Structures are given as structure tokens and as C-alpha cells.
Length: 372
Image (cartoon, rainbow, N blue to C red; front, top):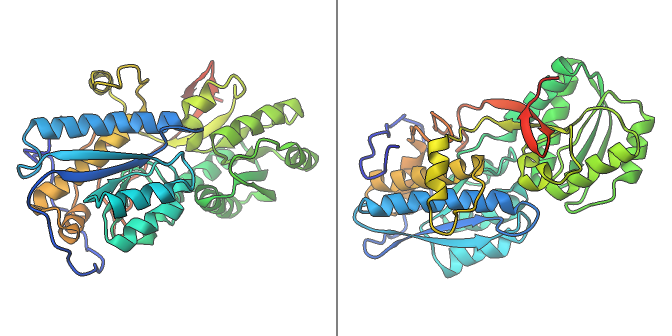
């Protein structure tokens, strides 16, 4: 793996940087404070535990090689529970800890309300999996190493129309930044392809009773249901759909890759889309060797958490400072060969330039490629 000290895997791409606020004073002494925010408890704790394991590995490697411009990284972590609790977590990192940059959040439900706090303070944010389409538009210093749902929603529509042969669908989505964004993209693309959306049902995050919505959908005689719901909600929806005899394909989003969804014992056969993220076995072994994370079942979030730190640190190394404007300028110039992706580059909005998706299905408490 290429390490930050050498920066041998970094090249400028010449991206145009959007207008930036006035430069703030840079700190030249002491540790670099890197904030980390993600779910360490709650319905998606496996996301956060993996991402933190990857982030910790990255910090350990960088510090072992002398840090960034001779300064060590101090990782300061906050639990956002994959929810609006991200607001208080972000406020603490930005206002109390005065961090130099933020890695996270994982979930759009946290990122939507929390990221504007960092934007207002001028703090660079590198999200590792929050994917709602509008998040990078919140400010000039917001980036992510995971593709926007502007890609995922279209891929789901194409899969359901072309592979499943669905022509009439229902949508049941979680009413937060992630659900709102992805279902809108899906609906527009599905209709463009020639399909019909017969009903759109929304529910608050944490809903566990979908019987009314399922009964309505069943009476419409749809070919499939697009159900971008969060983990707990998704488990309840799939279980109750089966109990009601709604025997059509149920297709969710990347939230369903969570261990809590796969291993629930209730979701066999559920289908979901997820960005193709590399998870090399050699890398997993390095994650398992990190103190405190020996028992983590390393998955794609470990790769994403690792790369989010490495990309941020590399920008600081090139900038020669933690000045937030100069670091942001370097982030736009990123060209990084990561663990999660062989090519991490950002467009003028801070989004990944390249996105590849795959479709998976729950089988025997795990996820396997969809085979029909």
C-alpha cells in the first residue's frame, strides 16, 4: 500500500476549485486533530465499527512513518447513531475540539443536518459513505470517497426495468436525506425507461409497522417494490411483506449491506444495490491486527474509512499545512489509488468521478451477487 509520507500515489488532476472563504490561520505546532463521526451504536453500528477500524489503521500507519509534515495525527471520535444525533456530535468536534478536518459521517440521515455545521466553520469534510445526492452541494469543502446516489438510483431503476422486467412498481422509502434523494432519482429514471410508479409511500426513520403501506401496495398488483429503507426499517418491511404474501421482488439500497440487516434472519431473498468497493483479504488482515478491532468482521466500510483518512492526510501533506483553504485546494486535486477503489478523484462538487455498482441478494445471512 502506498503510504502518505511518500505521497507516491498522488498526482494533481487540475480540478477547478470553487470559491473559498478567507484563509484561516494555520497551526504549525502540536498534533493534527482529525475528527471522526459515524455510528458506533444503534441500527448501523457495524458501519461505524468497520469505518473506525479502517480509519485507525490509516492513522497508525501515517504516524508510524513520521506523521504529516512532522506532526502526528490525533483521531477524535464521535458517535452519531446514524441519525440526527450527528448534529450534537458535529458541534462538539467543530466548536469544542476545533478539529482540522472531519472524516464522516457514514449516514445521510446524520450528514444532512450535521455537515452544515462544519461548512459554516470552514472545516473540510470527507464523508466515507453518506451518499444522498445533495450533500456535497452543502458547501465547497465537502467531499466523499463513496459515489453519490445520483448514480445508485439510476442503477436500481435500470436493474428493475431491464433485469427484473418490472413495468409497474411501488416505492416505499425512509423520509430522510438519503431516502428522499435516492427515491427521486430512481423514480425519474424508471419513468424515463418506460415504467410506471403506481404509488410512493414514505415513513419516518425507525418505523417498524408497515402493514398499512404493504396492504395498499399489494392491492395495486405491482411487479416489484423499490424500498430504500434504513436497516431496522428494512428488516421490518421485508418481514411484514412476506407475512402479507407480497410475493414480488423487494429491492433496497446500500443500507441493506449492514450486518444487522443481513444477519437478522428475516431478510432472505431481499435484493439491494451497492457501490462496488474493494475489500482485499490482505487489507482485512491488517485491520484485524489493529488493537481494539481484532474481532471486527472487516467489510467495505473498513476500506472506505481507511481511504477517507489517507486522502485527507495526503492533501494536508501536499499543502504543507493544516490551513483549511489550502487543504481544500489540494483535495480537489486528488488522484489517489486507494484500497476501496483504484481511482479516487473528485469533480467540481466534491463527488467521485467514477462509480461502479453491483446488485446483491441476501442468502444464508450473507450477501451474494444477484443471479436471478
